Length: 220
Image (tube, rainbow, N blue to C red; front, side, top):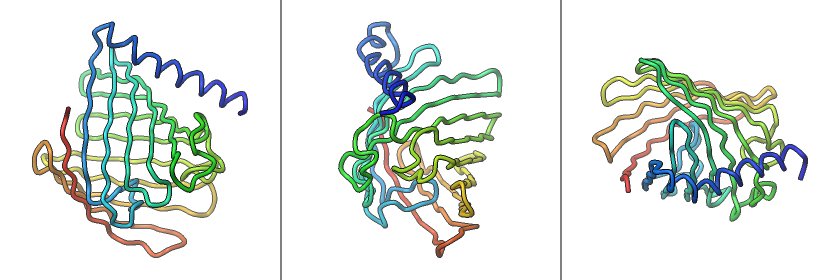
């Protein structure tokens, strides 16, 4: 493990240990669970139509938060465990969030991320103004494992909420001559049921396709 990975491991160990400290400080604890017809990840159908189930738990206090997200449905990587921590807030109509997420795949084919903290990590910066939001994802650890096959990988997503609909466009930069841009249109039928259509509008290297996903989620 490199020096930078040791630092990342220490950071996540600190946030995980906070799980026993934050509740004592009367912080908010939230959890949710959902099922979907497929695992849609940034335009990619990772399950090739296989249903996915996911759940998360998080602790938050004064804008700071930390938690764990788990999902099935990825036929290549297997079960996914995401450790995340961040800080966010609002000033009038302006919102901001900075997040660090560590991706772990202990049951799948990604041998380089099979359970070591610090092997595949992204820093995520989100800025919002009213119904408009822009998120930038930068790979800071993971040049050989996970979906970030290059240490230069980054992803940017811009979305617009309009009533029950959300329109989003996302662009993958793989750090070489390969890029991919997708468009998502989502509709929230109610607080629990949603539908998403995702289609590629610029895809280098393979034939693009359109994916339809229906999801049902609940807060616990």
